[in-house]
Each structure stands twice: as structure tokens, then as C-alpha cells.
Image 1: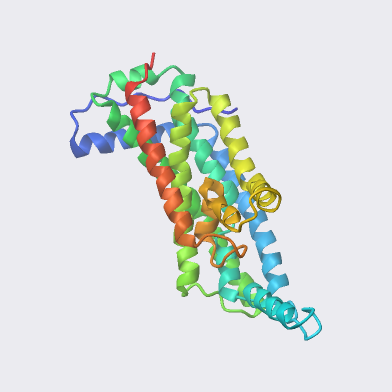
Image 2 (image 1 turned 45 degrees about the vertical axis):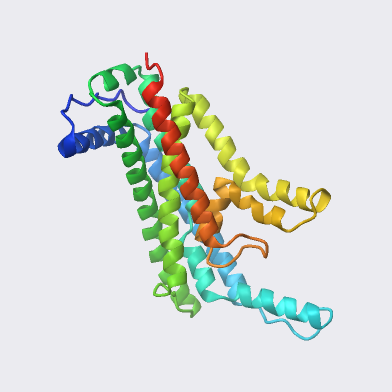
Length: 305
């Protein structure tokens, strides 16, 4: 695992606004001096480009699909369901929101991993003691780490959004559709995407506090992130059809951070039982608050030697 260069401990400050800004700048320098930030940035650009290609191909398939005919549905009820599904897929604003939020999956992962490095690097290079001894209030250092992690995540969001908007505008113009950037549906998806990025940064700090080992925290968080994204649907679906045969089981997937993030940025429901977007937002905010409080309390009381 590529690590940051040994961080320079912040100078002793007397508190107040200027002291907080000094701590934030010190934490920012720890990211800037890393020899892995450019790997994250390059990976972010490449994975966003790949996600854009997939989402554009999907949008092309959905938006150009032929409407259902009278023989497609297997009866009046089936025809109505087929038409409803067609209307959902043929919603240009929904497809635009999906295109303009391309790169969320890997972008959130990179934001979380960078935040983990911001914490575990202190223990890897054995500078945690110096960092906290040179700062009167340990909580101020912790808050600075959270702030910088969210700022870095917001920069990741900005990179993906710029790429998405440029490519998306070109794509929808070539396809002959409006890009719907003026619609609240699309704007909400883009803004919710920013919040999801920032909260993954918060999660990264919390995980870095809980698991001091840089390698251990990186592997554990990556496995949980990927498993939470790809296996949750399979597990909850099996529970729904083999054990608890109620639709609320599928809706309950939103309790997982990865699924909550997907629900929060979705312009329309990905599946009929999906929770509303605002539920995903509340779940993510709850995780962010809990992670922040727990991380702060642990770092304040833990022996850092």
C-alpha cells in the first residue's frame, strides 16, 4: 500500500479561529505530500470515464427502445406494467441524472481510502504522539481531519461532476435529447452526490480511528464497501423470497451505507420497493454523525503512544 510521506506535526497554537485554520492547513499538507494522491486522482478519472461509457450506453438503450405493443404484456395488467416500465426507462431526466452522477461508486471508495490514510498514516510513521502533544486540544486535530477529509472528497466530486457534465451535455445533444440540467430532479441528484462523497470521507476517518493498521483498514473498508454494494441486493432478495416474505425487507436495504448512497442520488426508484431518496439522505447523515462522534471520542481517549 502506497503511503503518505511522514507528516509534519502542526505547530502549537493557542486556539481560536486562526488556530483552527492552521490545523486544517497542516492536515491539508499531509494529503498534498502523499505519494499516492495522484494515483487516486488518475484512478478517479479512469473509473469515471468507464462509468460514463456504461451509463451512456444504458441511456441510449432505454431512450431509444420501442414502446410496448398490445401483445407485449400478456393481458391488460401485464400491458400496463410494461408501459409503466417503459415510461420509467424512457424518462430523460432520470437518465440524465444517472449520467451526471457517473463515477460515484469508485469516487466514494477513493474518498474513503484517502481519509483512512489521513489517520492511519500518523500511526504508520509514528507521528501521532508528536501531532497531539504539539496541539493543546486533541479534539481540534480530529475536527481538522474530518474537515480536510470532506474537502478532499468534495474535490473528488468536483472532478467527476465536471467530467460528467461536459461529456453528458455532448452526449445528449448528439442523441437529440435535452440535458435537463435545469431540472430539479437532475440538480438534486448532483447535489446529493456531493453529500455522499463528503460522508464517505467522514466514514474513512472513523474507520481509520477504529483500525489503526493502514493495511488492515484499507482491506477491511474496501471489502465492506464492495460487499455492501454488490452483495446486499442478493442477500436481502434471498431473505425476502425464502424467509421473510414481505416487501419491506427489500426496502430495508437502505440501512447499508452503500445502498443509502445509491438511493440518495437516484432520480427515480431503481426497483419498486426502494426507499425514497430522502430516506437514503437521512441514513447517510446518521452514519456520518455517529461515525464522527465515535471517532472523536475514541481518538480523544485512546493511548496514542
